[in-house]
Length: 41
View 1: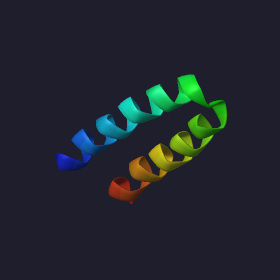
View 2: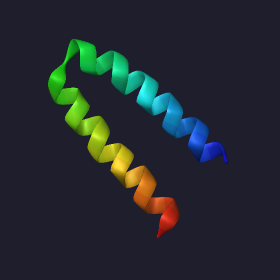
View 3: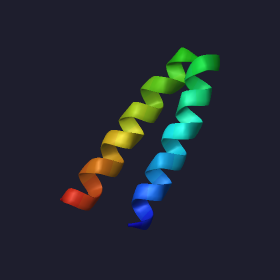
């Protein structure tokens, strides 16, 4: 699924951002949870 690749890309970016800014990780997590919920629902 394409969205899986997108999710992996977001995780990759989040990982880099997390190292720079901790707050960004919270935003990424909230977005990732949204990505997971959207396709399922």
